[in-house]
Amino acid sequence: MPVMTPAELMRFLDKEFPQAATAGMTIEHLDDSTIRLRLPTNEQHLRPGGTVSGPTLVWLADVGFYLLILGQLGPVALAVTTNLNINFMRKPKATHLIGEGRLLKLGRNLAVGDFTIWNDGASKPVAHVTMTYSIPPKSKG
Picture 1 (cartoon, rainbow, N blue to C red):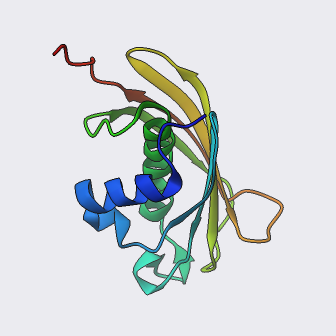
Picture 2: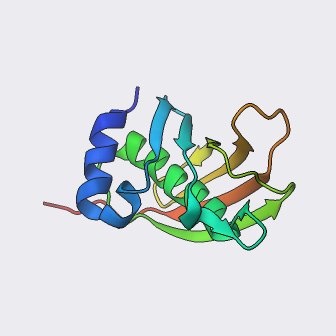
Picture 3: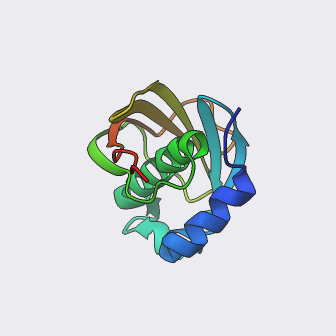
């Protein structure tokens, strides 16, 4: 059972990373090992040619996996990305993006997982991401 609800995660994001919280992203599902997000795209997410930019896809995966980890650990603001690898598989259309993250391992020091991104309604993904996060040691006190 997650220790933070989607609403609590979004409030935390709004306080700690307001630039991320204003993007219009919503959490559609959260459990012990998965998260599903929706990001409506707009002009700020596009690159020349009208396709969703790579940085937008990286951001969605990174913030989504961060929220998945926090959902399990609680508000650990200093958990940080240590590795992220993205495979761009198809040209993303300027529609809603759906991102699904999966926690493969949650240890004391590291969290490992993957994240797949689709255009809403599409059956084939536009990107697949693998990532590792460093988890700060618990403070004694």
